[in-house]
Length: 215
Image (tube, rainbow, N blue to C red; front, side, top):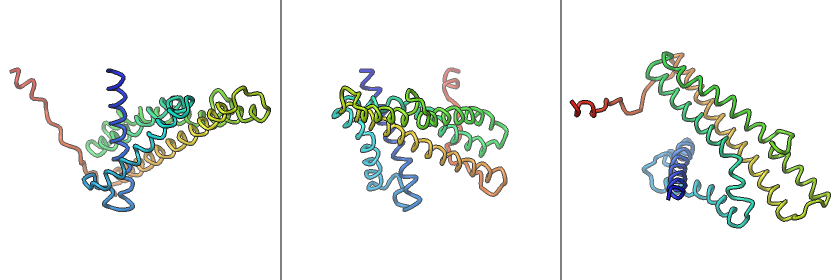
């Protein structure tokens, strides 16, 4: 039960967040797509996200070496990059509400996450060591196939595809998070210079009523 609920909850939350982000991005190209209340946009963006992670499910069924086996090496990187996005949002909110006073609370962890995770992701893609780099691993397996030293060519081709797919997905992660980070910096600079309105859209703080009820 725990495994089923955990997986379903993660997929549900991830699909919803992905749909919101995709709609927000597409809304810059066409305004109706950015409205979360416009049903064609909701269905279309949701379908794109579902097809994206559905591909890996289908791949896992058709290829035992695919699916979760190809996604697992990206789990740590994607998890920490998602945390970096959350810290970008939190930093923006703190800057709008309190200026520089509390900015260190989120900016220091953000800098640490960006440095460590971007370094790790770069190594996973471009490291010449096959045990680390996706492209190096694919290159070594391809060389072994050309030399005729592999026992199962079909399985080796699947591993090569998975390694290159991981490299592409990891690269896309880096580009997307770097874009969000640069745009966040642009907003922060605008707020500090006074060229951008520091308007807070979040719900106001409401004190808990539990203590009042106890009294």
